Length: 277
Image (cartoon, rainbow, N blue to C red; front, side, top):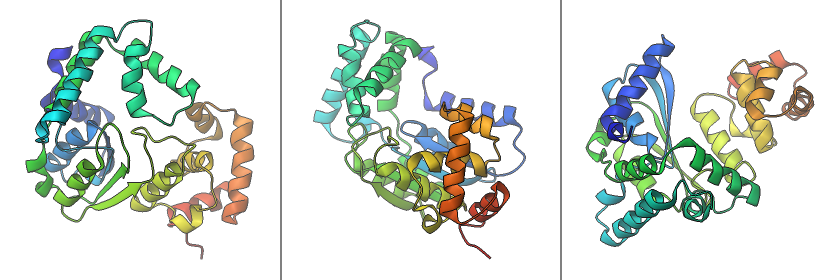
């Protein structure tokens, strides 16, 4: 319900998910866009539970909290448009939302995003969510973050300005900031920013170093993520919506590029940070 759209409730939702998962060791927390604020607040509240904090396309201040009246006025116009035309089968209203998120998307990706937006929430909830996002302000929490933090942000992100990502990194002690060559708020696997995103994330989490992954494509890096997580070929295929055969063929190429001969060797290499003994 729209009435439940608040930072307090988003933190409570995160607490409920973690508790239900019964995680018994510190875990990495990824906050994307609006989710960054809830993850920051969670990491401050439970520093013993969080091993790493990753923030992508995130912000500490919503659109109404940035001291820019003109941008706030334009944001209110977007909220009004969402409330008026979100559920219309003509995607013209949602297109404004989509084009800001993925300006470099293909026509098929745009159509998919437009339809996803229409079928996953109501106009009332979409407007309430956009309004709630605009009032977020967790800047006071940034100096209290004590866990290792990586902040990544698209240079020309049309949804959340680059300076908001820089503000996060500057406010969190010891945080590393990575600027991605991208205009998309949702990074696409077909753009150069995607492999950079994967490489930085894996290195930050203690996985393979960039030199071991530099030769891999974006799709191969996704398969590597599943490999390191211990997933079977079938599980990787299901997650990526590809066939088992495609995964098998990709793994053969990945093994060749990494200079290993088996799944076990590849996992050992990747978990050892890309170094070979």
